[in-house]
Amino acid sequence: MSTITKTVESKVKNKEKNLKKATDSNDLDTVLDNVKKIDATCCFTKCKKRTSDFGIDCKYCSSRFCTAHGLPEIHGCGEAVRRDEQRKFQHPYTALSQDKHGKAADKLAAKLKQMQFERKAKQCTSKSKK
Image 1 (tube, rainbow, N blue to C red):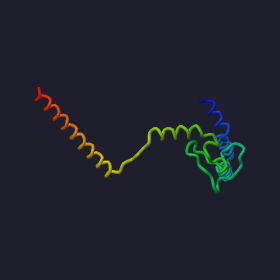
Image 2 (cartoon, one colour; image 1 turned 90 degrees about the horizontal axis):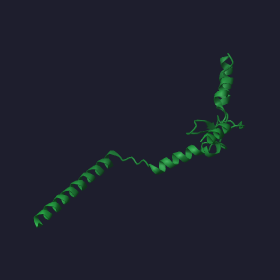
Image 3 (cartoon, one colour; image 1 turned 90 degrees about the vertical axis):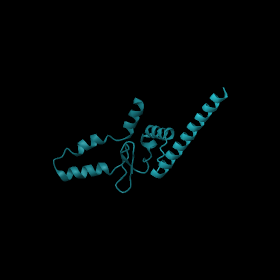
Image 4 (cartoon, helix red, strand yellow; image 1 turned 60 degrees about the vertical axis):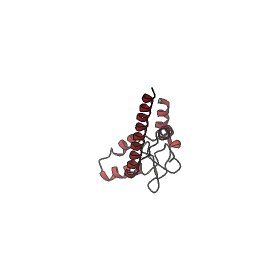
């Protein structure tokens, strides 16, 4: 697991380090310009493409990438995507509306009553035969 983390860290820029360098100045305008430049470039290492016009935000690492590095598998979030898709496949979430939930609950209650009645009827008939 540590090798995966190392590859992800090596592919994605260290944004905290860059932000510390950008905020070293005492001039507020300079700091804001530097931070805008950092936020407006792709977070992939050695990529200088602008993302201010069109960029892709990764929902796994919360970084912003250009269109070339936007896919999670390309910039290093492939393992997170695999885990997420596996979880979705194994535990699908199907939300029922209130109406459908009520109908399903009524249907289940009716089925349980019917099954309970059939069990009682079978027990009564077996005792009378003996």
